[in-house]
Image 1: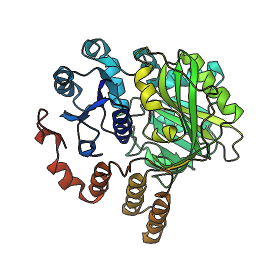
Image 2 (image 1 turned 45 degrees about the vertical axis):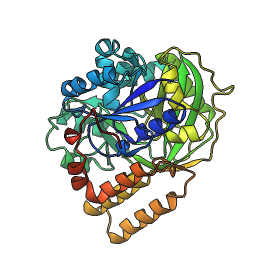
Image 3 (image 1 turned 180 degrees about the vertical axis):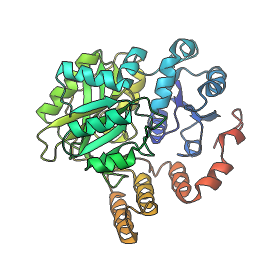
Length: 405
């Protein structure tokens, strides 16, 4: 069995640590902030504190690279989008220290270039709502006038935020003019797109050299934002329509995809049409639902990049549907944020919290594991005690040679 270094301190790292440890692997994990309290897990053998990957990548690598040798790491597995891009950019430097469990660097770059990927969708025949890539306020307002109906404005870099949000929805051009009185200086381009008013569908999949091995489509039923943007906090696996199967296969063929990933789409309210959002060359934060439905993405995420022989499902789409999942911490945080921002009153906040409590009983909980409860308890305490918890367990206070919780 292998020693695996998880890079990117996310909820998905917890799923990976538990799944891969139970399969017999030894888990080392990077840490640039306490939450989600991965260091409290009994499935993690060692933690390596490092600088934030997005703000100080070189400083982070100066801690990570020696740790790969010190802990005799066999496989470096980037989990977050920032980690995936960093490892892709530093591929030639890192591959001498460990095997890299991720899609090819050129594929990562292709998925990150949203404008080029949208153009490729047009060529391949992948459905996509009308959009414009803009780089000035004038161009943005012109695009708003050209694209009819409700709109969504989002960064072309999916790791970024615009005006404090992952995406902004508008129903009236007047609202756009009021929000964008000046161009946000931290963005080179933005995407203005017609908003498809329906549920989001995330397809968690594995592919081998352009051939689909298995896929689990999951319909998002609730997010942490009132308007349906933001992060998914509840959903259910669904049976894939013929249209969805066709468009996923088209994308995988076009990209000659090799590895695990998550393709995202918007559905119309009547489920009759689809619009492509993005494809992430990594597992995705909520991929635990795919494993609950019978697709072993944790193991495939290391087997495929290492060139090991893998067996796909006889029917790639023959996974369980109707399985519900919940991310309760995200739902609670979203409800409290909506109350603080004035989007809802106390009664509205209470309704959101009640929905979150109901979803706790979903068969697949994204963080809670009764056999490994400590990280989840730490994450929930972080909602109320975030600053004091961060001071107590800040990465700079930790000794990489001795920490083990």
